[in-house]
Image (tube, rainbow, N blue to C red; front, side, top):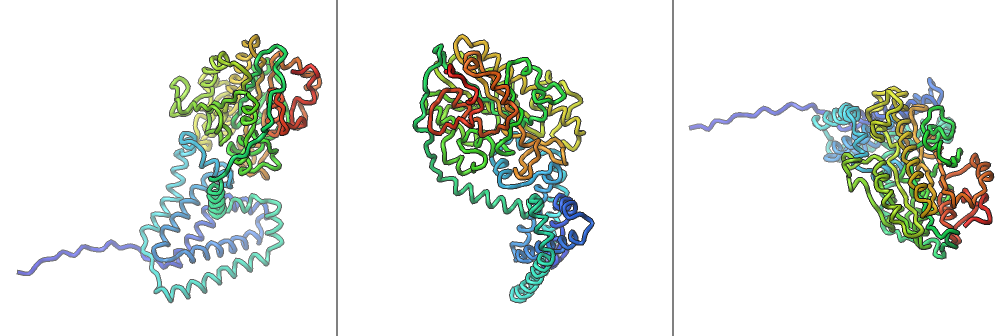
Length: 545
């Protein structure tokens, strides 16, 4: 008896040549994934112009040469899909927020928390990734790629790659003056070329991170000591509030029309009106502001391999402690007492390991009552971190309405975004004023002071930019002009000429001043202390303790 067999029909899959697919992917990357790049190119090259068209031809040739080079059997699909997914993710942040994905931005992303990252994984992001990442990736996965026999493919592809590179080179040489001058004046243009710039910077970050693993921390201020106790014998206590994403432009202490600092305005504080940050992201600014190095010479590597302000204070006999309510101390508090509020996750203040800054106030009174000697406490705020500004303050601080109640900023008007942001500043005003009140209530037992500096500012739609993290050389003032608030208790204040101090409040200040100002407040003597960078040094009286 004959056996019966049933033929299973083969699913018909489209067939496409490897070179053809390479050219299609190159065209997709250059055009669809580079909206921000082309908008900048048309602006900087005074579009419409022949230069923009030639730039497109040149870049397509370069991308095509790269794609053809990678069109090797078993590598083609994974490589193209990876490029498309990276380009889709990067274009989302570039096109929506004006983000430039440089090394510092990648470091920020690598060091963030799950809850913070979750605010960026909105419905808009998922829809964007589906449309511009997953759909084209699925099309690549479905097609059957036809490769020539290897010897023939090798010869054919080499000739094509050389021709494409020749076109790229010819266009570049023919327009070298135009392109070179544009790039010199607008360095952000190349920085937004997607996905080339993000991939290049990711490699740079990876190399730097690998090199940083074996860094040995060098001691600093080995001669540090407290010169003398206070005249009253009370311990000196300074609370440093490291702010998050607060921009000076929205502080009413500095002239903002809205009353975002009503409580601080009633406190006897000094507000330094012209203060700039070391960076535009927490990963840069936070270690820099506690570093002995000024912004002009600070590098991430120097910050890692050199002890900081808190180490110097500890060496001088001052108790230093860090309270964390953000994404970590970035190495600053590695050698001192450290408390993470997100780890404690107190349900009264926290949700999904993300806490309102009031969680610090809840514990501050007990900490102050337990002070035995000279002490410095750093409170690292969550502050005004976006894009979910509405989650940074409790319901009773919804003063400016209607505010944006979502992390999807594209669904809100600019005024609604500003309203939510201003409410977060209003809550910071409450936090700082309450810290001052707690110190005032204990003036019979300690000589207190509070220093507040934000790590960086924030863009709220100016020039089409949102959030922060722009490279410093192109960063708008909204991301670098920060609030700097100082309060001193009666005993510390007695040693400072108040008229002199008032006359200096409009002078340029920066994160460079924090290290030396705190050493001055704590009366610590060391060779690394620079009086010129102490915001109070020129106004201290001889009677200052």
